[in-house]
Structures are given as structure tokens and as C-alpha cells.
Image (cartoon, rainbow, N blue to C red; front, side, top):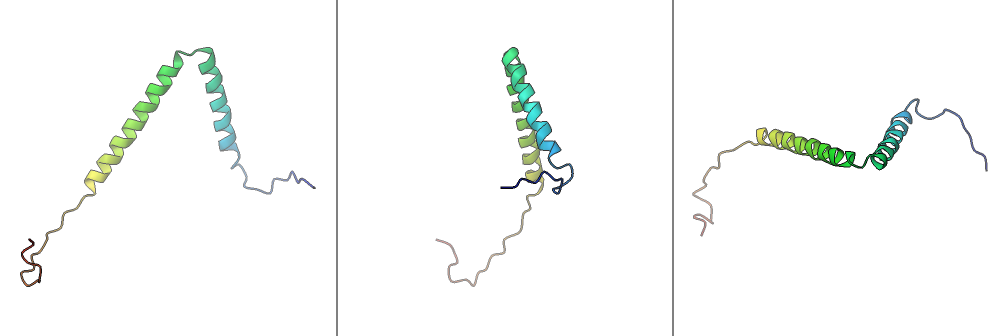
Length: 81
């Protein structure tokens, strides 16, 4: 089995996930050393998630449109009973 170690893939695409992985490991080590920071990390996640949900709800509220419903008196099901 041959393994080719060439840079044939996308240029710097690997750098983002690798950097995120290193940051998560460092954050895990820091939380292990100073466990009181866990409360601040969780609170920050809740604040960011809540803000994102509020922004999503605000955008959804602005996209609601109302259309007038026309009555069709000649339909066989009129009036709806």
C-alpha cells in the first residue's frame, strides 16, 4: 500500500478545522485546570444561542405576509358547516 503525501488537495482548507481542534483542546485543558470557568463558558453559549434564536424569530416575523381570502359563494360547500 502506498501513501502519497502530496499537497494535491485544497490549499489551506485543512487549516481551519486543525486550528479549531487545537483551540478546543486548549479550552478543555483550561477548563480542567480552572473549573470555575465552565460556568462562564456555558453562560456564554446560552447567551449566544438565545441571541441567535431571537434574531431568527425577528427575521421570520418580518417575512410573514397576509393575503386576502376571497369568498366563493358558488362553491358546493358554501357555507362551511
